[in-house]
Amino acid sequence: MRISVEKGRMFGVAWPWVRFVLSNTDIMTAVNHAPFQVQKVSKSKFHGKMFGVTVKMQVVEDAKPDPKDEIHIIVDVGMPLGLGRTHTTAHYRYLATDITTTMVDLQFTIDTVGLAMALYTRSLKRRIDDYLDRVMADNERAGVLLQEDDPSLKDLLDKKQLARINEFRGKWGQVATMKPAIELPLSISTIDDQMAWHPELAELTGLYERVRGKASLIEQELIRIRETRDAVATLLVARRMLEVIVTQICKENLNRERGTEPLARILDKIGHAHVVPEYVVTSMGNLNRLSTYGAHPKHFSPRQVREALLALCSIMEWYVSSEILKVKGCKDDTGGEVANIPCN
Image (cartoon, rainbow, N blue to C red; front, side):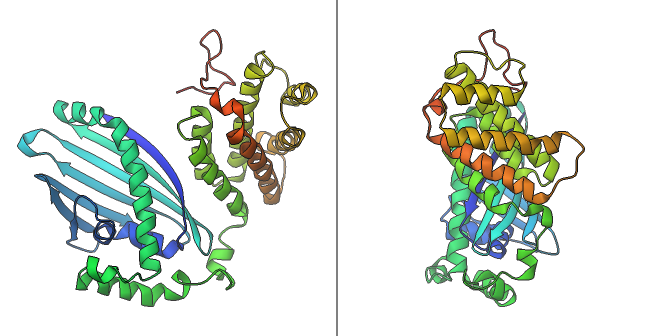
C-alpha cells in the first residue's frame, strides 16, 4: 500500500540553514526534542531505534548547494516481531525567496510491506498528515536556532555535532547570517530570470495554509503552482485556479452552472451581478487575458507571469476571506466534475 502527502511552508530562515537542517537529521531531531534520536554513521547515513523499531535513513543531496535545490531522505523502518516494513521517501524542494525566507515543499511517500503493516499504516493516515505539519514546523524551528546560534544548542548537542555546525558556519557564514539590509549576493538575486515571480509564489504559499482542509480543488492547484518552475505551466495552473473559483461563484452566487461560455463572458455576468467586489472582477479579467499566453504559442515576457500571479494573489486574498470558501463540495448536481478538473 502507498500513502502520499504533500506539504508546503515558508521558513523564516536563510536557505543554507534550511539545507543544513534537512541534511543533518541527527541535529534536527536533537534540537527539536523529537520522540526518537538518530546517530550519524557516515556522511549521508543515520541510524536510530525507538520502541523496538529500527530506523535507517539515507540523505541524498546535491554536491553543489544552491538557493534552488532538492534533498531526498530515504527511510527504512523495520517493525518488531516480523510485522512488516515501511519504505518512506521524503522529497524536499526548497527555494530562496529572499535572503531571510525560504519556501519549502515536502512530498512524502510511504510504501508498506506486509498486510499487517498496511492495515496499521492505513489506520494512522490522518495522524500522518498532522505529523508532517509538525515535522515542517520543527524543521523551521531548528533552522532558526542554528541560524541565530542559540545558547541552548550547547546543552542539546554533543561536541561532534557542535563542531559540524561551526564548520558549516565558517564556510557559509557570510550568506547564512546576512541581514536583510545587505544586498543579496549574485547567486541568490539572479537565480533565474524565469523565476522573477518568487514573491508572488511566497504569498500564495501563505494563502495555502488558510485554505488547507477547506477547498480541495484549490489546495491541489496551489501545490501544483508552487512546484511549477516553467512559465507556460505556471500560467496554465493560474488559469485552472481561476476556473475553479469562477465555477464555484456561478453555482453558489449566480445559481447556475459554469457551462461552456467563454470565461470573459462569464466574468462580465459576475461583474453585472455585483456578487464579487469590482477589484476582484478586474483582477480576474487581467488574469484571464494574461493566462492565454500559456494556452497559445505566443511570445511573452516572464514579467507577465508575475503580473498574472499578482492578479491571482488579489483574487485568492479575497477568496480565502469570503463566505464562498465555507461552501464545500466540487460536484455538480448530477455528480459530475466541475471545470473539467478532477475532484478528490
